[in-house]
Image 1 (cartoon, rainbow, N blue to C red):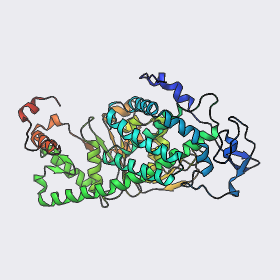
Image 2: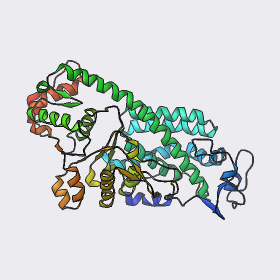
Image 3: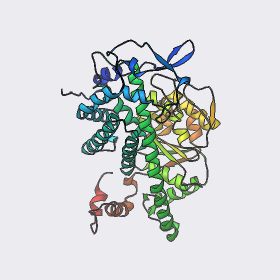
Image 4: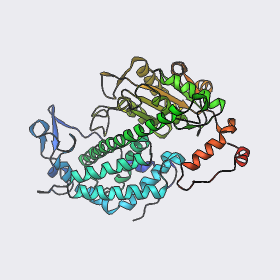
Amino acid sequence: MRLSFRKSEEELSPIIVHTRLPRTTLREEGVLLMPQPETLGLGGRNGANPRGAAVQDARPVNAVQPPRHYHLLWDEELDALQPVLTRVSEHLAEVVDHWHQLCILHFGDTRSLAEAEFRDLFYNALLRNTKDLLVGDMDRYAVDTIHTGELLCERKVPFAEVVASLHLYEQSAYTVFPKNPPPPIEIYAAFDKLSHIRMILLSDAYFRSASPSAGARIRALERQASLVAPEHRVIFHGLVGASATMRRLYDRIDAAGETRGTIMIVGESGTGKELIARAIHECGAVPTAPFVALNCAAIPKDLIESELFGYRKGAFSGANADYLGLFRAAEGGTLFLDEITEMAAETQSKLLRAVQECNVRQVGSTREVPVDVRLIASTNRAPEEAVRAGNLREDLYYRLQAGVLNAPPLRERAEDLPFWSNTLLSSSTNGCGRKLPCEMLKKTRW
């Protein structure tokens, strides 16, 4: 069977709507129940009921050992997933094809991986992962998933894109699940737990890989900076330029790094707003602390709140485990929110409270948790116009405007073109000894 894809979300939405999951918690007289594999209609290693059989037996959670796999998944649930994992394995090319189409739909031209790179990386990763799961080898599964996380970090895929892409994978996998009859809701719940385990492993590998790279980069930059007088700097924490405009920016970044106040970076797309945010972070007292970036335009507006603040188990359909959220992931460091004007006004209000009170409350929780996070936001719009248009809350802008940095476009600093072009070529493996014609570059509209 070959799936056909259309480019609009409206046309893809029947698939997406079909995969919304009901709540999976079973309660009987106040006792939380854990379904047996035999009662899921799909059977386990030691026996099977006919597909679609009613749930007749369930096990109280307090009568068994804790889940064996990452505090989430029981062996019985892994057994029950075998039929749907087999379906995913048999239709892996279709799953990856559908997944790539969803990524195009959600990320557009901002996605980090080209089509060939996407298919090569994720097809092979899923092939290994599915084989590991089908033989019940969770240790091998963990090793293979950690390797994928390291590759994603190495290829500089933003962590927010990794999270969103994994959600889109789950939707794509659902399209090859049996249709007649469909799996019971407990199978979707177990598959969702497996997705959470994958995220735990990927995120741990991603940030472990990022930390040594960031540390080496910072040390190299510090050595370079110590040899150059401030007025002669050409490269500053990844930013390139020696014009008066860029030197003023470097000075402001240095000053901003000495504080923990909120910062707003304003500039057109492609002017290096995230590089500026990273430079501010690296100029701070603890440059090795976490730096977590989120592109607000790349995440659906109804998911941003749970990504930022986290959620409690059972807060909504599919929330089968606690998720800390990006605020707490950035504890002691910096949270960078790119294109903040794409965030819903209601979420902006909650963001403002989190910044003012230094507390966050997970979705589904009544308790606030203290956080120590420095917030840096950016926008490609004029902030005052965004406020008037209702894209940026005035009270949030008032909080952010205490420190505003402007990212100058290249066309306003033509004298930086030679430095910029030479740095670009030197970073390419094929650029040794070559130079770009600067006169031609100066005539180009940037």
